[in-house]
Image 1 (cartoon, rainbow, N blue to C red):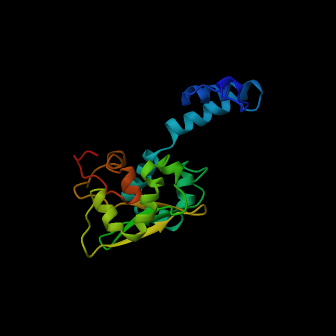
Image 2 (spheres, one colour; image 1 turned 45 degrees about the vertical axis):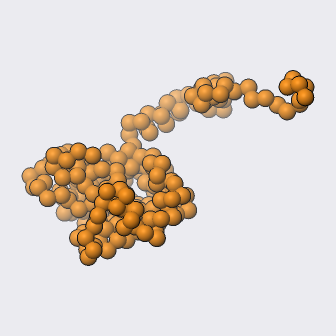
Length: 207
């Protein structure tokens, strides 16, 4: 059948994803269904205000301030909110601390619940079926694939995030960091260390 004789509708949007988004934005703006200023605010938020740098500041402060650490472990939601880290996907936070006796890992077995205000947008592997399925069955193997090998005497606890509760792992403070201020300490805290698939960096180490 000639192509121009069939009767199904053709897409009028351009094939390039960026152009499609721009075209949709233009149409919705012209129809006054969205506010361009609101869109700019959302983009600025996700580009500049949220991300693992926020979680790193929280961890560095917990390492440096015993009072803050105690309060964080008691009520992480309230404590991080006082620092300005709150909002969607950050409503119900729980902090779990790594020790020599226990290493914590976080997963969302149902979807990809994740503390956006503290860690930003989740990485692709966090959302993958393989990670979500394997980390609960064989956490040490998953850790090894991330380059983390724990002593046998260290237990591994896997926390399953939900729509109601999200977790922040407080990694162990590295040796050799006495005297470092919070800004210096925050540079040692990686996104993966706050999920539990990594460890905090040691001074001089690079990600």
